[in-house]
Amino acid sequence: MKRKPVIIVASLIVGNFLAQLMQTMLNTALPQMMSDLGIQANRAQWLITVYLLVSGIVIPVTGFLIGKYSTRALFFASVGAFTTGTLIAGFSSEFAFILIGRIIQGVGAGLLIPVFLNTIIMVFPKEKIGAAMGLASLIVGLAPAMGPTISGFVVQDHSWRILFFGVAPIAIANFFVAYYCLENVGETNKTKLDRRSVLYSTLGFGSLLYGFSILGEQGRSALLSAAILAAGFIITFLFVKRQFKLAVPLLDFNVFRYPRFTYASIIGVILFIVMAGVELLLPIYAQNVRGLMPRESGLLLLPGALLMGVSGVISGKIYDRFGGRHLIRTGFFWIAAVSSLLTMTLTVHASFSLLMGIYALLMTGIGFMMTPITALAMASLPNSIMKYASPMTTAIRTLSMSMGGALLITLMTITADYSSVSFPVNMLEGIRAAFWTLTVIAAGGFFLSFFVPYAQGSAHPQVKESRQAS
Image 1: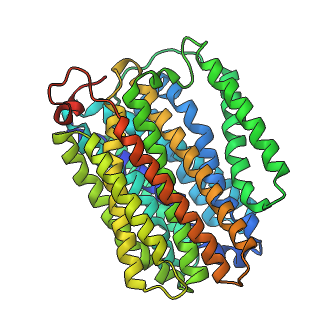
Image 2: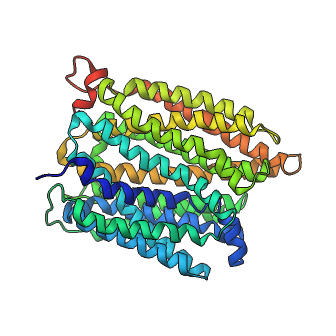
Image 3: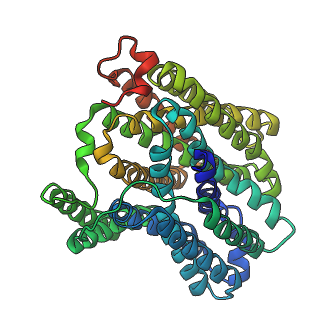
């Protein structure tokens, strides 16, 4: 008897949650790791950057892999890589080997999310896609938001290695559970991998991610990062150009011929820049400006992380009934308004409770947006090119999070450097400049939400748009 869709994707849910958790879990642990390993901040930062970097490089290949290999084969390969990297990083005493472990982790993480989203699309009916994407929002949003919180509580009294040793057994257990629960979905076919596309995507996306990641470190002397970024843009252009010439592209950019997918993708990029920016900047403010301990910093973020996950599930059910356009519009207005309020609240002696409450309101709005944006994009495409949707969506969001975070840190650093006041007030000015930028970006998302087209052929498009593809 065929299993229920939730049972089929159960192992994918757990695997993706762990992968997304490890994306941000080291943020709060970096000071302890720097002390234990005897490294400076610029080297320690690579333990975070390289994870996202490798994931971004792997993602474009996933569209090809989904078409060629079975769901089970891809899942076992990705979880196997992630678990292996986790164990290497946990047991290593040298920075280089920990970095290698994070690279192998990133390979597994880069495969997991596209496989997860593609499986959801295949096993859940269209009329329940909103609720199904609510599950995805728990992974994509809740796990990274909880990473710094969990890390803060752990590293306050224990070694940072506990972060790896705690994740590894769960990943191993999930591997065996998947053997009994996970089913193959979709059809496989014999397709040939275009090696030039792989080379272009690896060099292009890798250069862009690396260039933006070192941009903030170099401050005013950014010639190297500028050269790397220029090369990245050129190679990425060659990659995109080549995809239109291939019968079976690595990433099918024809998905952007569908207006609803295009608008939903752009708005999704904006949302993820805001989310990644807030999750990156607020812990810096909490520990460097406000003077909080890691555990206090984690506690500050905890209510927001929990509410974001809950709001994502609720908004999925609302999406299935009423559609996504008004949800997106209302959500971005809320995010822009609360972002401006949070920015004005940031002071050297700001109330802990007030910060916690405003951050919780902001993350509730972000969580409320994730499900309708993802569902709207996925429901806009025909099944013939659906397998390219999740790798494309994940790739552009990964790039936006990395680039957006690097640019915000650069803005914060430059503003603090040019400030006429001393630490920590100069740091506060830099952080507030970055938060005002996030507010403007959110306002841009609100503006774009008015241009999202209705689904074709719907008498009541607000209600039925989730049940029809463009």
